[in-house]
Image: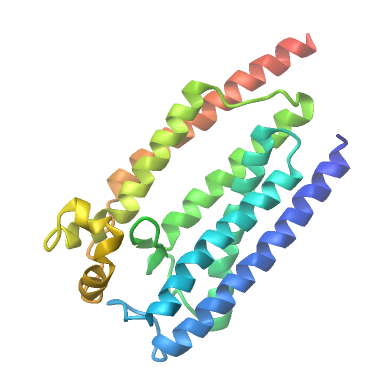
Length: 244
């Protein structure tokens, strides 16, 4: 594929992801007008049950749309995955850009936010998901760069091991403070049980973030960087060998 065609793919994926980010921001603007007219801050407020359910499925729908964009644009399974990462990262970054423009929020990159609700509540300072998104963009560009030279490029099992392990550690970091708070009232199993939704929400309404586990987060990022570095080194070596 020509370089100009790849640039067009990234251009349209970027525009799509930015548009998705604005849609996401619009929903948040409406919700905050309803539930946080004085401005968003912890503790969280109780949503109507039907709105909470819609929000949960909206998050899933957003992931499916971003995943679909990557799979439509990619030339191989590996590139489809990479372009999904790219779409997700652009969407995530511009979501905060549009929140700043429309609501003048967050106050800083270290302002706490609710990041995700599946399988439990993820929280963290805004800068944390932005950092993750930047590495996702780098990895996506590398995947497309090598795919352009060889469409059989893939992520091997050792690289997957590092990428998945690092991602799990990041998730642990994002849910750590919230789960630590909830463990004062529930067992670990109860926290992740759908049958406890009402009881969990009652306690969640008293939750205020205390500290973000930067050590866990940094450890996860380092492991992910290791996976990306292995992928780059292996494919760079294969490319150089092919050109000889």
